[in-house]
Length: 375
Ligand code: GMT
Image (cartoon, rainbow, N blue to C red; front, side, top):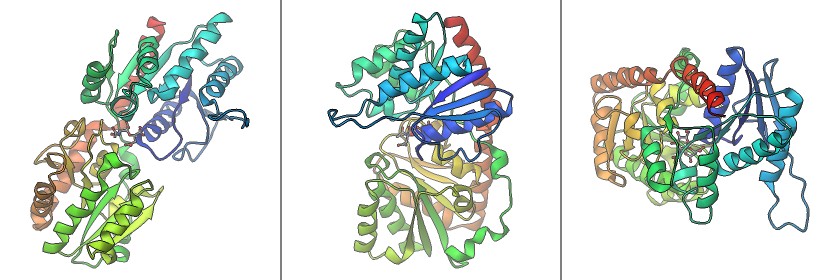
């Protein structure tokens, strides 16, 4: 099948999922066309079955806002015609489902029928999409999609609660390519990051308000009072500078390392003992799953879809949003006792394997068949 994948090319979870899905589908013989404004960060190799088409938006001084949706829908029309693409799969409703619908309509004028699958990822529903300024257009484009999927049951329920949705939503959870995490790095370069007796605590995100970065720092502050520890902060975003200042204020700047964005997440997780994800809302928590497959237990909030991934008392612990005391106590329960840490590490990996890519990609293929029947 020839599939166009529309996504954000940045370090966000939706872009990562879309890219990994495209690569997996290409490995299964499909021809994949990524259509977005930059080559996706996790797409290292383009090959016979993987193509990238850049959406270019020419700057015109008359426009206060440059019309990306217009450029994207035009590019979709051109690429569908040129490469005889069979199906559109758009990730993140805004503005991709809207642009996809416009492309579909333009193509229909020329007698070309193409089904569209929309995958909802989280903030496109919970934070941005439900804003009154966007809601009518988001509702419309979700309802016009031939098949709609969401990355967790929780996100499905949020979508049904916040929008007037007419059709079904199929839940297809995010996935992980376990084979990519199967290697043994020699000592994980752990000794470069911490001394033998120090525990390594990691947080990876795009440092937005929704991630509650202050809580990450405060939980670590409580942990390091009791045991020797280091904090690895991976990612870029608006809250990063504030987090660095908070570390200085709390006198723990020498224990916190800020990496910026990294393409070596697997190496960082390899030497980590614990992962912190205290988010305000999280439709799934792909970062937690990436930690778990690396045998890193997770201390998280119990919001949104996180409980569908992180199992309380098994792969880590869950607490109410903002309950720093409970989160740090849970962290210490795991970290203080070597046997307990080992038990959680093994269980975290076992839970993560339930989301192996080989189980999930065939479900997308099934959904594509359904989209053809619906179109
Ligand atoms: O977490 C972010 O802010 C990035 C965002 C995105 O769309 O790139 O992530 C969302 O989609 C991920 C992939 O499906 C999910 O794992 C994240 O939980 C979700 N983020 C939120 O719901 C806040």
